[in-house]
Image (cartoon, rainbow, N blue to C red; front, side, top):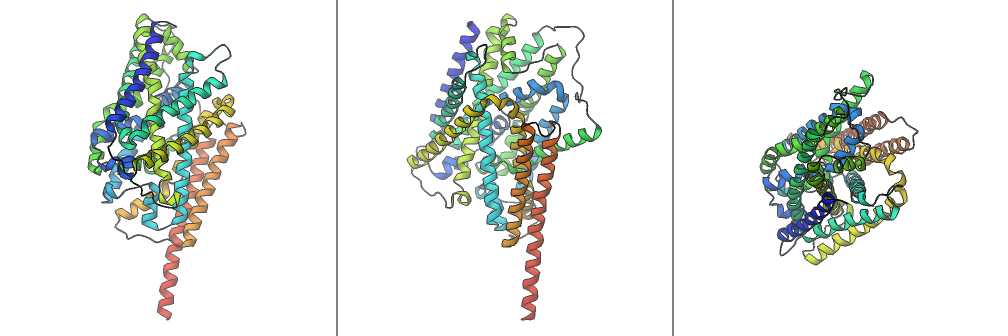
Length: 502
């Protein structure tokens, strides 16, 4: 190992120490449920904006995605960032129009339940949310294991035990600093992680600019590099728009972050204030890897990228590589800690746990988080150890499954939000309507998960199979909402007729 390697590892250790220092400074002397899960609902625009940007995408996830697909998708990847940011704005605006105070917000499942009284559907929403964030946490810890085991890879790759150790180590670090103060700590550490991510992306851009081309006849990718029919392109673009516009409404972390903020106006100010950082984080990596492709460089994984950085110009090995490595490794925390505190928020929801967690004992709160997260990381680690040999082929189907699974709940959330905006009183759905809606959502989930399994096993085509399954699943979920609404209307009409006859 050279000087740059030692600098990278030392910097990563120093970054981890900063996480714990920030956690200690953000911790409250006396924890309550509100302070632990919702930061006392006093977060400002300086908290909301950086946290949203940092957690919106793990840099490592973005890079892994781009490494294998920028030559395939081309500039269409920029559409992801544009639509996701627009979806965030739409989410805050619509919630603001409901005139509901952020102090009254809780989980997405609770929001639906408060408006409709539909307990079965609320439970399904909460359950789908928990499963989605378990997958998110698994993906982030998996990517972390890939980065952290870079120096332990031999000719035959990384041993199973080394990968498992890195997987559990990353999870343990996140557990250790989040348990100190919960959501308040997440806000503080997200701001630090965002700075690291920005520095890493800028360093990557400098590296691309200074790297000499391998040939003279290369050219940047076209807007849509992959050859496909017009119908396929339309389906793919529509899928991106659907997911990114609805994700803010269906992600529990979005509701938790907004509920932790002092007001909707404060959240919107934070979002606008952090827009330059968002654009850099989402767009610059695409431009960088498009530039690398134009210069004749294309990487199949992070190992190849790191090898190129270490063997590049002297400034690359001694300065740029450590910055990029530290940013890549530290960026995992911004999504992993968000997933962990969101999971704790979900399981503390009375709809899922069966009771409201009322204790104000800080030791009980920390113990509850510690025990549940240790169990989750151990179970996810066991899955990782057994399946890590095949995770390369499962990675993209898993990512698609996360977004698709969350999108299933979009019709329900939009139904409740629009109802609030229109000033309609709380709609008590019938038991039949609630049951039909819940069954429809479960059926939609089975459709989506079935397509994921079949695609990963090679029984469905790699192109458009999960995208089409997502549209079908959302359509089925929408039919469930319509059935619940119509059934309620029919029930009310029957009750009115019975009253007239009497």
